[in-house]
Length: 378
Ligand code: F0G
Image 1 (cartoon, rainbow, N blue to C red):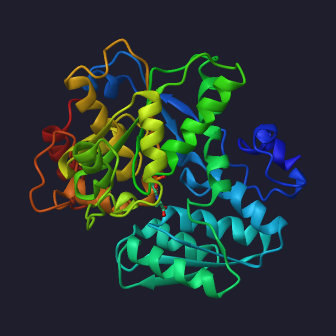
Image 2 (image 1 turned 180 degrees about the vertical axis):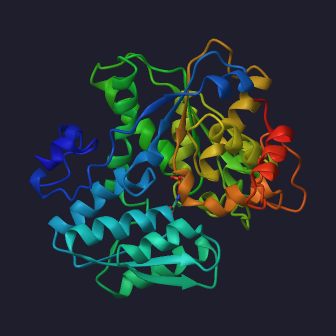
């Protein structure tokens, strides 16, 4: 059955959200690889570092696991039109799953502030793409208004069925580790739904007696989009003041996260932390993950950058097992990678030994030989 090939629906007993599971709209999502990152581990000061690469999903991000769940519910209940506000990955996933189910989808994205790969996906999958002259938070505001007036099914991450799908990588992770539980799971923080979804997965496994302990879940934000970090500093997570967000990690360029209370709950319940990282730190970490042959989009790289901070002051020890959640594929935002290597990512980009800008030469062997001599050891 198609649903048995899905890393989400093979756990259908734990997500009883459809009247008939054979109605599931699936692109065979989930079943993503768990990679070792020994060189990144060494850089970050841990002996044992793994990456659960959710960018290896059908549309290239972790959003597919949630979208198969919520879109299936929309289709089973007979909705004809679905919509979301997005920084690009949710919209790509929604457009693809809606197309599979034959539903109409409407995407609201901030004009000029999402990566090209993601924008192209919503068009490729046939969504009506609406670029608002605003940011993500402005898109959410308009969509919240629209759904009160029109029969549209909303697929933002406040949709509870999304979280049911997004809890399944926690199950896969433990399964892939032979039922061992890592000490730490580190996730990027944007709209702040994913941290609690994973937490739900671990907590349910514990309740079922499949594991004896839940890992510490830590959330990392970009400095320019850090409302949760600020909230933890100012009030221990009691109150959150929205910020005007700005970061080249456009997936997490969010100033007013919808699900912050859920994130605070799981961070506190598991004993994890919230950290912020600079644009430089994100760029360096992304290059380090790339140089290990894995790659990810900028928002995912905050996890490694954050891990470095957590090991530096002893919050994470060398012998503790850490899993980074890589949320998006490197090809989502190739412009970022090219700008990093050309040295034009942002105005104060520091030099990095990992920078490898392309070399342009005349098509002559002697010219290539000369360039090789000065570039690599042969
Ligand atoms: N990483 C990537 C690649 C994302 O696309 C997002 C969110 C996050 C991390 C943050 O996850 O919101 O659950 O805290 N992207 C949303 C979108 C907002 O519209 O695609 P979160």
